[in-house]
Amino acid sequence: NCISSDGFFDLEDLPKVAVVVGAGYIAVELAGVLNSLGSETHLVVRKGRALREFDPLISEALDKEMVKQGIFIHRNTNGVAKVTSDGGNKKNITLHNGDTIYNADVVLMAAGRVPNTEDLCTDCEWAPNTETLHLEKCGVKITPRKYVVVDEYQNTNVENIYALGDVCGVVELTPMAIAAGRRLADRLFSSNPIHATSKVSYEYVPTVVFSHPTIGTCGLTEPKAIEKYGQENVKVYTSRFSDSHYGIFDVKPEDKPKTVMKLVCAGLDEKVVGIHVLGMGSDEMMQGFGVAMKMGATKADLDSCVAIHPTASEELVTMGTWGTSPQESGAKVSPLNGAAAAEPRLS
Image 1 (spheres, rainbow, N blue to C red):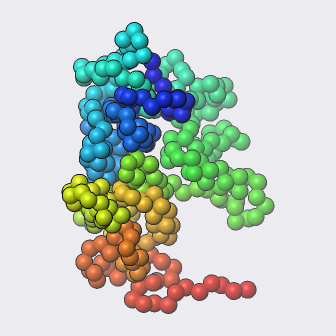
Image 2: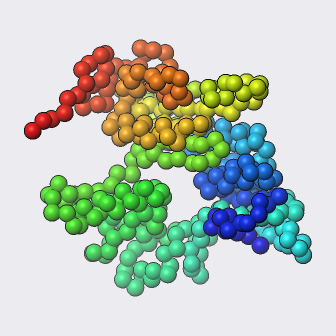
Image 3: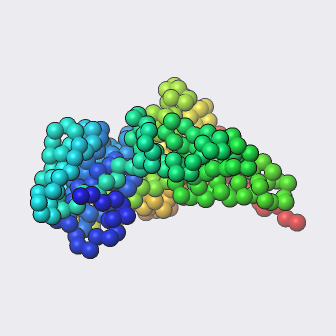
């Protein structure tokens, strides 16, 4: 009665009514695609909204945009209880909260993966499929949620057995796995002494959700920053506006798609520890800001960059009141107050 994200690409006809179950990347992305193509789209989330682990400003703004676009969001459902057929091609979806969605053409399950195991952890929403690897036969440790236990160098507890990527449960993104694999290969096989302690960093990893509109994010959310550094050590800058792309659209300002941004800064030097953007172009702009964050950018460093006008990204280098950020730089060669740019080392 149901399909997965793989089955989505096998669809030959546009469903009139589509139900997407899940609250993560794939769920909001495919719900957005189906809705944009013209399907009556229902998004079933277990709790209050999708992308709950993202910064609240972003997840709340996406929620409002999805509703505005016509997606029906079923909240606090605790998931799907059952899916039944009406005897034809239509499906009825009963939710754990007692609600029912009738006459769906497609039910797309995007709530996550389950392990191939008889003793499924009852506290787990989803877990990697490590059961078929039979890791217990060689003594490799796994967590109750079936993740492989590794150290910072991707070593398991068994010599010469390594693990990386989603199976470790740290940052579950394909480029993250590639980065970890490259560092591991350098450490194991490179003859260059500099690679003897090579490892990947899981901090300040930029990522994008291809929702409608897109999301770009890097670093700590505001709640996570407060948890780590304390409320008194965190300062936040936000902005909300309609992208100039929509300037000529003959619609009311309040009906134009919104871009929302947040800078999360910490410490006396206002080091940038989180950047969160929802809106047109956020996917492209985040890669560059990710580089800046990896290099230790402060709010003053962002302020020192001349804005590119008219763009949405200029908002990230013009937030707040000019000149009020601590004049501290995270750069090896400070760019503040008109300082000369760093020069390359020559042979």
